[in-house]
Image 1: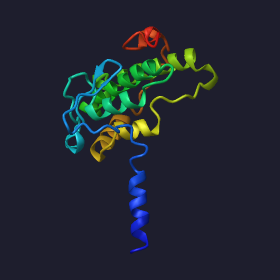
Image 2 (image 1 turned 45 degrees about the vertical axis):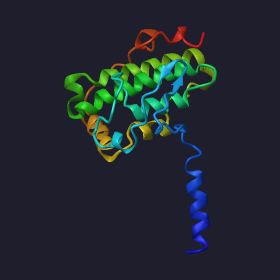
Image 3 (image 1 turned 90 degrees about the horizontal axis):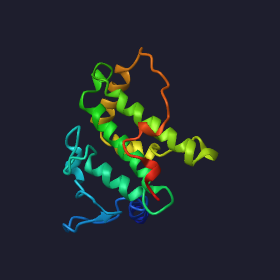
Amino acid sequence: MQKALPIIIFLLSLSGCWNYDTKDTSTGEVEIIDGHTLPPDPGEAGKETLLGIDSNNDGVRDDLERYIYHRFNGYEHAAKERAIALQYGRAVQEILVDPEHAWENKTFESMHKSGSCKFYYTKKYKPENIAYKIYDADFKDRAFNTDVRVDAYFKYQESLGGHTFTAGSSTLDKCDVDIDQLDE
């Protein structure tokens, strides 16, 4: 056990190295990124319910919003990618509300629209890397970060089984905001 303790301590110290939420907001300090005031970190309280906490009522859970603003910051096209990620975050919230009736309630359309916006961006700004991922495994791990949310996502997927979808268009109008005007 004495040999394992230093290794455990070392591994625990590394666990924070890939965390995009590096700022401690427990002091009540206001954090602003690109002119946007971030909501406070909800901590574990944000995982207590299916929909989590959305203190600023923007349609994105506070923990996911904070992650998005920290991750998509400080590089070319960051604002564009952030807008797409926020649109996906709102779509995630919509499908979690009533995942068993995604087809009947047409909540799947917000997820589809988000994907079309991302594909529009990828074709226009990343043509050399058409498989470019904005909401990759890390992002999805953050979006579906509790067992209840993962279960709801599976129910959402199951509710769409057997239905036919059209490919739709990957045009700017699928984006909630005009991403072409961002990062200018």
